[in-house]
Length: 346
Length: 189
Image (cartoon, rainbow over all chains, first blue to last red; front, top):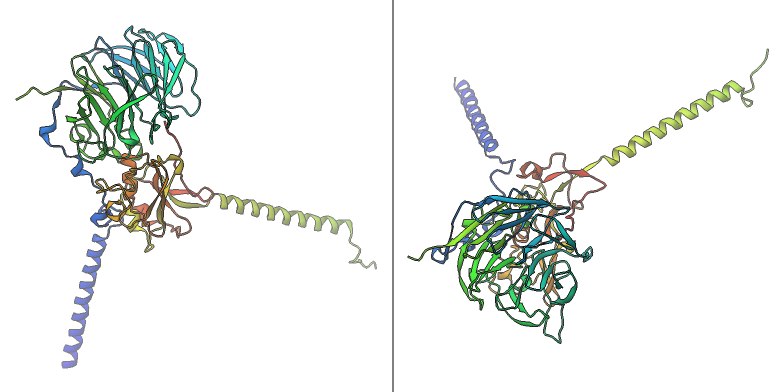
């Protein structure tokens, strides 16, 4: 009798044990993450986190989006400029598109190649920087001239025009070229020259912007040094401003700012990549405030633009200003022009 | 009765033996060709740098205790920046090599001065665990010259790679064994 009870107890015990084992195995299978959905399991020291850096004190934001964004219609928007009449010119794909101040498309002309940068002179000529050369068009899109190629290494990233001069930034050769309006090379600006105290530009990536200031000096971004330098047209380095800082007052990352524009009151509007920020500096380079930060400019508000490498490299927004003080940001990720106006005080 | 002399083959024997020889040679040729062809279609695992999101799964899902995935560097694409965000944390206390300023949790990236203001960055593979944190930093702020690759001196080439199963972006894929690395192209424009 006892032996029989003992046998039954062992059977029950074995059954319970088997049931527990099955349950544990089931839980283990359910909990097993073979698909990576639960993440890498690495500690927080392995997480790349710039969320805190992306936050900007709302009191520093001086601008707001004024009107609905303008869709460029490009798949690869490259550059923006505004002419003296307020018309908005955008370059991308293999075309130039012109929008009225209000955002209506008023003109378009095709190009043989991908444009990289553009500017419009006072007499309405459109200077377009292709990868290795400048092309000049009239307002109807008729090509007036194609200047000599600067070679295979050239990567033109910015172009500016003054009364008699055209300045071209070549990121590939790390040099600024000064031409007359007919395309004749006058001189080169920014070559390393110890005697003239010119250090040479540091350009790690293809972002190299320039503009002619209202004081008659040429302003050129030296992105690897995180500063904007002022040159005479003959190439003398006069002064510079800007410094590296992860904080909002400086330029973050390896190489910023990527683009800039100059407002009528001689203040500067700068664009940064990585931590996408558009900010205002006064004529001497003192930080004034923010036009828009990552929370306004980038989906997700942080470094979401860099989900894929190709997205990261598209994070260099271009910027232009119009005579009314509006700031036009070319969003190269969404291919739209976002227009910001100064908030009214109070 | 005529006795056949084996040392003196007839024409029929000669033709038969020649045919057998030709058949064997043909079979050998076909086997060699197929063998070579199958070797050419052998595949190994590799990461497509254009799809990789540097999620960190490569560091923990590999069946090896130390992952077969390591960070590599496309020098031709690197800007040799003084302030490299693949090397420095987002908020470095100083721009020097002190451990507290570095991004890599294992100190696997080494920095050496080239000329002012340029620095060269190299990966110490023994220290790299393939977490991809530097890849995130370099992609976000720089040119994306740091990227992850499966090192074939370590990879076991499992039939079903556990990293590939856990890869959220489909970047981990099979490539021909005679082209085992997917290196980043240089395109400054």
